[in-house]
Image 1 (cartoon, rainbow, N blue to C red):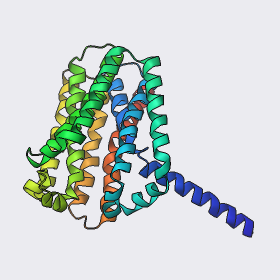
Image 2 (image 1 turned 120 degrees about the vertical axis):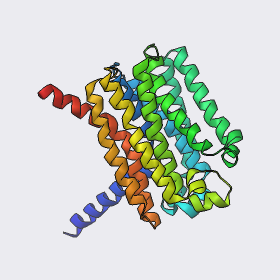
Image 3 (image 1 turned 180 degrees about the vertical axis):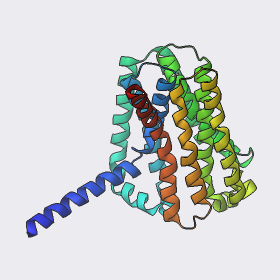
Image 4 (image 1 turned 90 degrees about the vertical axis):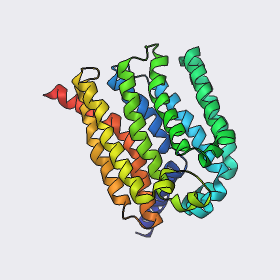
Length: 298
């Protein structure tokens, strides 16, 4: 009996560590990028390619891993749970980063062409440029950080597919690009809501700092409505498949966490809402694929 309880406790602790690593190690958050790429593949009726999805996954995983370790001291004040987890494995991170980068280079050499490689290099340089030289522009240009970040997401989510398969960046890609931009802006600005007081002290011109938290949330509700328009118009004019209408369900998804955020007062609630907001992109291809299966059954 005692051994059985001890075994269960050991398994429970092991599972808990895995979950913490998935969350705090950036593994779950990094799924957002391949989810955008897979969504673009489905809507533009492109071939689903596993190596490209892995490449799209490794890029943000490398960035998140680097950022988490670089900002580890900041997490001590803003995210103590992540700090405690990452602090234990700090010495292993250089080896992990080396492995991720080596795997990425290998996949690019094996499966990609020069056009996608150049694009990835430019995207990476753009990220480094922001982190080193352009980050200060957030103090001068309103919502600069959000626009820059979301533009990177939407370009990566659509151009990866276009360049990999040598498909012209046609109207269906533009529709997906606009949709990702609008939904991505909601996500990016949402994460500024929690820190609007500290951002104000730092002189950052985020939307919550300029308008206040309540007005900023109202603006995000407007963006949530606008995000439906490219999908409706794309389907109406037969630019994208009818199954794309299933993405409209995420209007309710975003509405839920935005509405909940209006009354959120403690860090625990914000952490949960942040996870919900980030997971939205991961559900896009799931809903699309589920919808396709339902249509085939009808």
